[in-house]
Image 1 (tube, rainbow, N blue to C red):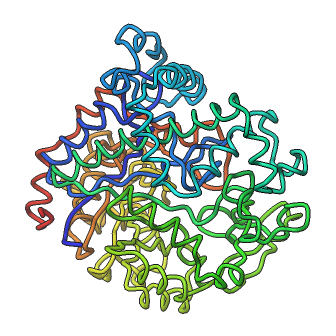
Image 2 (image 1 turned 30 degrees about the horizontal axis):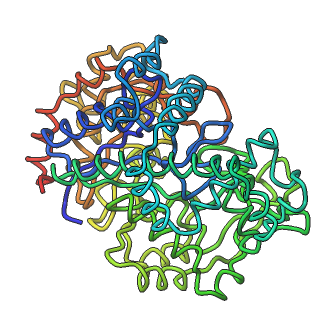
Image 3 (image 1 turned 180 degrees about the vertical axis):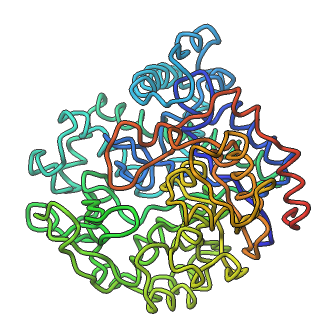
Length: 512
């Protein structure tokens, strides 16, 4: 990486007429904005199909991509829909929030309509995509068909001949024409997503914008990945986990975070030189220019919680694969670029793994300035081999964070970032700070972030617009309806101060 800046904005959070962000014209407009602002990286969250909680980190497949993001206007341009048909799928609800229910209903409708018009030439192109995709595509298509067939219950409750992932039984089950067409529909969805995604990525790359994707460490239990690869995970004879993933009590939760995902059988994975991981990461590098690996510390040691536990408090650290995995990935995959999310409960062994991997780790300004032991990890200590964030998708917005801090922490932060018009050492009561001063404080926070030595500085879109916590993306450890629904309005997108951001990139030498 060269010294540069990035903006964090998920695809679902783009504005647009379909109740959810898509890979359509608003995505291209955002790329144009980034280019005008001198921003070199666009970071997104996982593109995977979301589960019941709408979390992109809890998906039916770690390989597949979310059909909600397929833009119907682009399908019309490709000849699958008419402009009049596209009008039927326009969302008439309020801007500013993602409506997943609307997106699901409507994407099902327009994708099935588009699939019904697949011609011979298009089918040949789709067949090329299928042949190039590998086993994951068939796993995902079969799982999705069965998941729908059995009313979305977990695969452990399916008939034994299907739940066991017996290839002979599955071949017989999907042999008739109707079920073959059902499989082909899911192939079509993934093909169309890839067509639209690659067009957007090529456009971004041609504008000098690289894409950073996010790779969750674990799949969901009820996923194609676990169903088709049971031996890769720590499961009992019924296909249920013995231990599950989480993290111990931390900054976000005094009970820790009980994620509930199945854990990898690392000994089994080592036997075939981590073939599953090589396949997964290689495919992600087809999608992105850089990937951020979530929960990187879990590769040194991971928090294993008994499956019967109600919180993550009573787990234990078990050893992960360490450098054996990353040595294999580096040998097998060309031009591999990784950011290691090394936040959380970090010890010397984790720090050593990050150093040995040579991947840049992460720093977060909110964590640094919110530390009551000021001095151990203040921003002036950050090194260039780091990716720095004002906050991540799991943090409060900067404005919300400033408002929620105790006066001593808030005053220290405001003094540290040098807010214009504020006398250093003065006391800042919440009631005494007007909206203009808060906006100036958020700007100073962003400016301070870009000024530091870290090779890449990334700012969530909410902080570029000085948004409050009511526009936060996610609150870890909770399953509230407000998680994952943040979405820009067109007015907010147009309010981005591109000249200010360009000047920051110019002054702090982050123009590539």
